[in-house]
View (tube, rainbow, N blue to C red):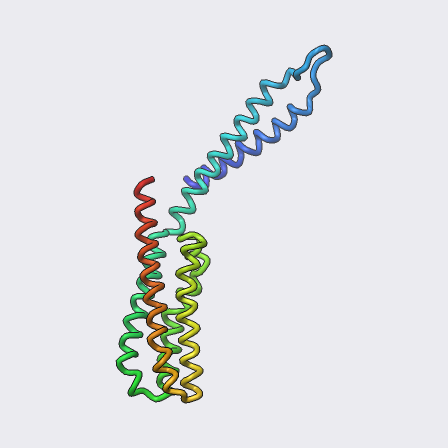
Length: 194
């Protein structure tokens, strides 16, 4: 249905523009100011505008429903919530783990939770808008950067640095989660008003 609407809008626009160009090329009859094709020209422009409106209407409907915006935001929020849960578990165990074990656990967190969120960055910015999406992505990127820094500190066996950095990691992912939930709520409210 949406594809048909997009094609109908595009077809009306193209036919309208082409016929308007053809009718606009006709010169007026001698001793007149206007071409005898003025009515056909006006109708063609009208159909082109209607086609453009139909096309944009169906395109906006398609972007709202195809992105499955609420589902995507819920998936990102769920991933972040699971990540925060795992980070809290790791926080209680981090003082007893060796550097190699810390690195392995951090790599698991990065691969299972952080990278899927980062991979969806295009969808996040399309869904939430550039400003809100970038705020969520910046928080995720800061957390990812600090997790990588923990891996580096663990490989250098600088355990004290790990203890200093770890709370900041948790803060950034909690911030990303809160922003994602907040923007999802705003998005749901704005869709319900439409």
